[in-house]
Image (cartoon, rainbow, N blue to C red; front, side, top):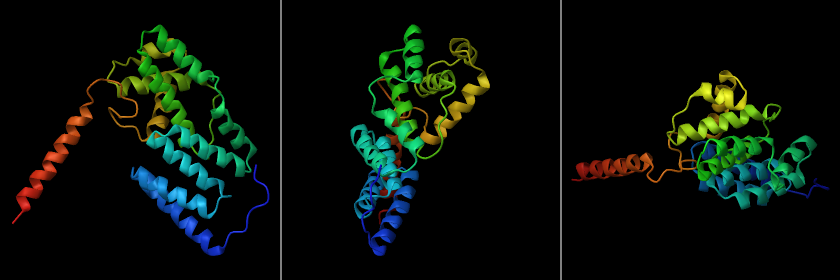
Length: 225
């Protein structure tokens, strides 16, 4: 927890706030590297503002840099006053698996899901808990979270998904799976074949990117005098 706050000038506070707001807009637009830089500058100007460290952690997690994300969370914990929130994020520093991760590993392994896809589900759970920020997290129904993560990773990787099968495996309702799946997709801004969680050899998104580049080049040539 934070001790006595360092003296920060009003100018630095205003600049840090502006940088933080800029970073949030960049984060929403998936300008992740730019968002990271904005949040880093904000934390340097006002090191004691826990929100700036939390937003930096969220951006770093989206970028896939988990070591630096955890370091930013460590700084967040240092300055945050909400003990419940501190306790929640400190759980990310433990090496033991939580109930959700244990269920994912057990259930997906029994069904013969490849290890890299199980790893993608665990990665998604880690990123979700960071991306959630200050929003409350309830893990009273770990089975629902595990089922939703399983369901989401299967959809990202174009595996056949039968909700009725998942309800029997995890002992939860279809509506519960759909609700938690929706939360995961919206919080993490997940797309089909999302590069973060797709584990196939050839990602269909590559062709879309190539097509977009080709179209842009054609447009440029067409408009050349």
